[in-house]
Structure formats: structure tokens, C-alpha cells
Image (cartoon, rainbow, N blue to C red; front, side):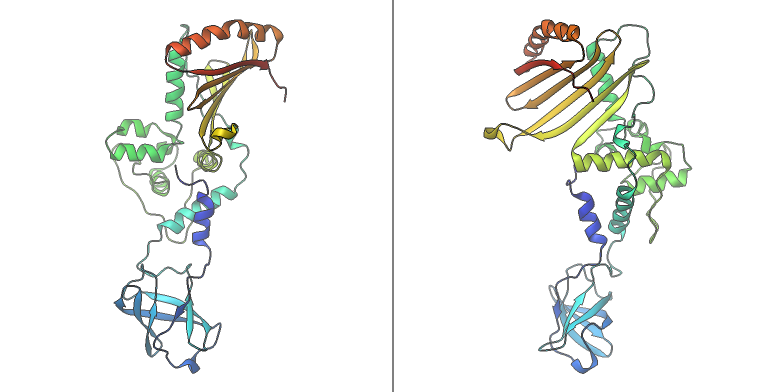
Length: 341
């Protein structure tokens, strides 16, 4: 994953910043300049690594500049001081011709998306059709596979899947099943969205990208905006939520998130927690919380009725035995009353 503070970093890159001040050497005629004055300079030649000849008006002088500067670039400078030496600063928001504009376009995209009302997008159902539609009874192993497939094709991990596709680990057919390649919009819009989200595919027969139009915030189709916000939320909160029907008229909510261990001895240890929430016809509200760390698995089952809690308590030993037989060490099990909200 990308760093959690992705948005903050990208926004900072698009704001007007000041690069380290460049002290001119040798000193030109300072009488032509005054503090606060904004001027343009044209980079002539590179004298040595980080040191360039720059023409300012009719004068040629040397100054240290960032490594991305190239001969022929036009740079915007501001006079910081004229004594004891003439000193300039260069605005980071003004990219010379040799720099890449794609980063600022992506930053504008993510900034715009992050500022839109979230409308509880993390609670939107990612699965519109039931996972299991046949009349036969579903086995637990089948449900696990269907949940994995639903989350895998949700579009949340599209960019990672593109990397797998480039490495030959994922097929084109698999990639085209994700929402980013939906045909609900015209092809040109799809290609622009795919390009801005790091995409390489717009259709099975046309694998091309369109660079974002300079100076415009890329347009995200309405049906993809909640998904992009979910991706941003996942990066910021390190939490993924899936919600849908596992079979007709049976909704389930599934959460996965990372958290710091509450045990002081392993405070910095990574711990993953997954939760499922169901409202079953006979058992009522039932939830299961599974927390994984290096020690093993901790299991909490909670239910809304006393009868259901009794059933869970009587059968939990069978569940523990099954997991232990499969090599999963069980640290603890607990049956609790479901908290009302």
C-alpha cells in the first residue's frame, strides 16, 4: 500500500512552496533588483552538479538549482535579499518545461475526491447480487471462496492487480471484471479514468491510456466516485468494509482492519482483525470478531439473545477443535451479549 498520509503528501506537492534560497555567485549588478521582485531566468549550462549558469535579463550568473533542472528551462525567481549578496528563491509550484506534470494532475484528482461529501460511502454495498444463488445448501468453504472473489473483484485493489497483470500473474479477463473497466460510460472517459487511476486497460481490444489534460481535474464517472473514495478511505484508515447479500435476502457486513496490539509486551506488533455481522432468521443478530497476531487467533462471538449465546457457547469447542486441527492456534474464545446501537 501507499503511505497512509498519501493525500497530505500529494496536496503539499501542488501548493506553492519555496525551495532553498539560491545565492548568486558571482554577484551581478544588485541595483537592478529589489527584495520581493519577481523575475524569470533562463538556464544556460550546467557548470557542475547542482550549479548552473542562468541568464537573468542581460546578465549571466551562476546559482545552485535542484537536480531536475535542465538546460533551456525557464524558471521563476523572487528576490529575497540584495545585501550582502543577491539571493533568489524559486517557486516549487512553477514546473520548468522538463518536469513531469502527471503528479500534480493526480494530486488534483485525489484532493478533489477527498473534499467531496463522503455520504457514508464506506457503508455502501459493494456487492449488488447475492454470492450464492443456487438452491443447494452452501458449505462454509464455498462461502469463504466467494467472499474472497467478491473482495478481489471489488475494484479496491485495482492498481495492485494492474501490477500483477504486467508481471503476468493476472489475466486480462480478470482485470476487465473490475468496476474501473465498466462500460457504463463512453470509451474515451473510461480510458481517461483508467489513466488517472494508474490504469492500462480500457477494453479487451484496446489497451491504451490517455494522459490527463493539462490544467483540468480529470472527470471520474458518477458510478466510480464512491469506489475511489473507498480507496482513499482504505489508505487513510487501513480498514476495508464489504457489504452485500451472501444469498438472497441475507445481508452480511464484513470488516477487515489493522490495529496495534493492546498487550504492552507486543505493543508494536502488527495485528489484523476481521469481523462479520449477520442478522439470521432463527439466531437473530450474530457477530464474530477474529484477531490475528503472531501468538495465534482470538475469537469473540456475540449474539442478541440468551438462547443464541447458549448455542454458541455449547458449540464453540467444536469450532476451536476444527481450527486447531487445521494448524490455527487458538489464544482465547469468548461469547458475549450483542451491543445495541
